[in-house]
Amino acid sequence: MEEEILNDLGLTKNESKVYISLLKIGSSTVTNIANESNIHRVNVYDSIKKLQEKNLVTKTGDKDKTTYQAAPPSFLTTILKEKEIRLRQIIPMLELCHQFSRKVVNVQVYEGYDFIRNMFIRFMEKNEPILDLGIPKFVLDNMGAHGMDGKYFQNEIHTLRAKQKQWMYHIYSSDAQERIKFLNTLPFTKAKCLPKEFDQNVTTTICGDEFNIQIYSEEGAKPIVISIRSKDVVDAFQKYFWLIWEKGVYP
Image 1 (cartoon, rainbow, N blue to C red):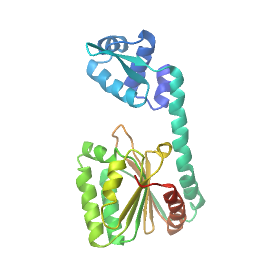
Image 2 (cartoon, rainbow, N blue to C red; image 1 turned 90 degrees about the vertical axis):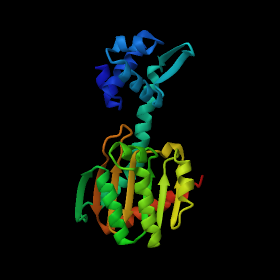
Image 3 (cartoon, helix red, strand yellow; image 1 turned 30 degrees about the vertical axis):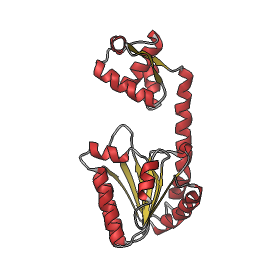
Image 4 (tube, rainbow, N blue to C red; image 1 turned 180 degrees about the horizontal axis):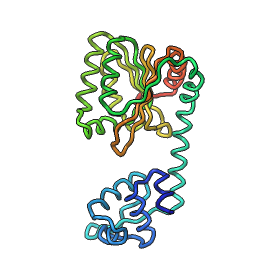
């Protein structure tokens, strides 16, 4: 039951087992954790790394003996709060979709980075401003896991845009400071970031009459894309985008 609830919070099966094992046995080595959880050592290391990123496990011990300790269970409420914050961030966007649902001509759901690449190629053909909101830093790395060079892909898009003088406005997550500085050196490009509490794994991109919602996973899964063709939705979201743009900052 405990594992199922932790899975619902976003922990993988192995992460849940490792965390529960550490709560039971206290500060321990990877070998002891592997024995308690019945998980291979290699997978224990991977789960510990992910749990550290979630602030649910800390490294203890010294240089001669590395051990790990579980954070108090009360820390799990932080995950819930973060999910609530992310949900609140996309509610206005979802309400826009609902508001104009009767007017939407075409709604499609796609999967994978190939669609995202093709989406930007279509945008090049439209040659209208591109507005990109809520881009997680890890997206470029995830592309590599799916056989696509993320940096080459973005450089290709930006080169094509510059040739036809097409503007693009980015609002990145707070951890992409260096990426934002680089983008602001490119022609026909402006980029800002929002405070950390607004970080999210959902990106919205609009151009012309196309409104796309891209849902990314830090675990490296293929992104899910909801593509909507509606000038009414785009017009409404543009107002929302520029309102957020005013809240953004240059690093």
